[in-house]
Length: 283
Image (cartoon, rainbow, N blue to C red; front, side, top):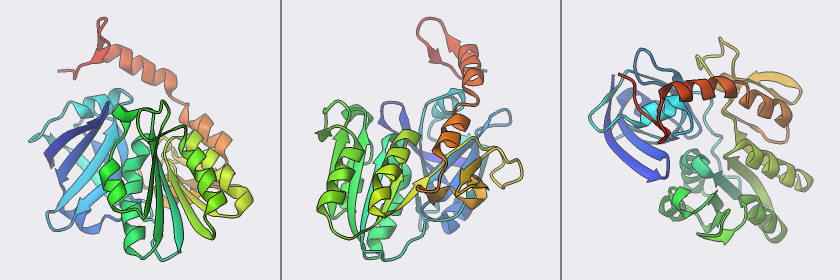
């Protein structure tokens, strides 16, 4: 049982939970994830670790309410208890001194890129950070990311904050202007990670992405999270979640991400009330 110590709405539809989880906080590393089960009847939800505090024994999770399960999770409040949190799972990010690094976070992908960026900065790298969202009201962790970056850029689709455009626009500019970029780490929607990977390919810059496919057990047993990387079938839960973006078969990743769209619509329709379209936690 895991008690929610703090709940915060960071942006529209994006919530932060700080949770008492001593064993996970003691072992968690940037890039790893956990699987959350709200109660006995809930779906298992994989969430990348957004932060951890080994002194306070706390785990921080940030999630976007995009479907039935995450909307239900978002109804929980401070003092409530989550039934299961399994982790840390997956391979941790490779943290060492590479040199000049570009870290990109798109939308809720800013949450997992934050601890990775911080660790890379602490390892002595020069960090160029780019974060982006649809608009100002959807942007998260701006101050936190700026504090751990040597150079910092904000982008929004509508121009309501930072530059108007996409994170890949700034990426292209930096690759043209900055010499000897050693690594790009991009986390966010699949189209963004794909675009970033294709953009860095001609420059020969190693590019790491974090994949979040359909996942069930998180231990490699079910095979639901399989992805194609370098012509081989791999499992995001045990082989990842981070992979070489130049080796990912993005067409397969995009196809598998849409596998259960119809089922999600059915689940949403079952729990949504009237014209408001607001999901209510079922009794």
